[in-house]
Amino acid sequence: MVQRLKSIYLNNVIPKLNEEAKYKNVHQIPRLKKIVINCGIGEASQNAKTLEYTIRDLSIIAGQRPLVKRAKKAIASFQLRKKMPVGVSVTLRGDAMYAFLDRLINLALPRIRDFQGLNRKSFDGHGNFHLGLKEQLMFPEIDYDKIDKLRGMDICIVTTCTNDNECFQFLSALGMPFQTVSSKKL
Image 1: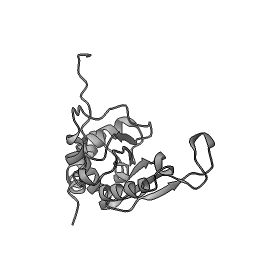
Image 2 (image 1 turned 90 degrees about the vertical axis):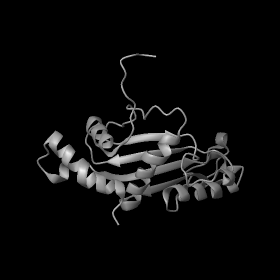
Image 3 (image 1 turned 90 degrees about the horizontal axis):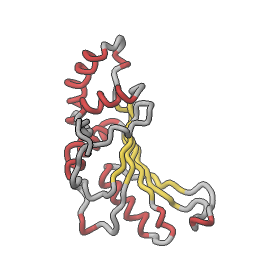
Image 4 (image 1 turned 180 degrees about the vertical axis):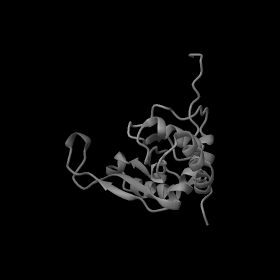
């Protein structure tokens, strides 16, 4: 079964982008490469259950088990020893990537209180988009009673776009809600 967002990409976004930019080759049309979700757990050194809860929450959100990231060297001022867990990360590709992005755009982002849209300045200059979320509760899969603490996460959407404007057009065509540029300054 083809993911809903992937079918939108294949049937609507590709013809629209090709019409606007007049690509000479089919492989020049922007596409998603991967989505990386990172969650830092600095307090894991004091509480061993923190790592377990974070892995559980991120695996529910992403649909696959996250990889535990460990410290490369010891830093005494942070009470950090070598090989101590400092974060968890998930890399999504293929259908899982499209399923997650669809849930992010249509379910999670609208649940943010006072959501005005995503910041247009969050592109990295190479055609990738980064956003940070303050809590995991915006995903409907997470049960409020089962979480121990609110944790944020960083989401990196990696595309084949060559610049920020092209990536903005591509993600807007996919339905990503960006902030509108208003003529009034508040």
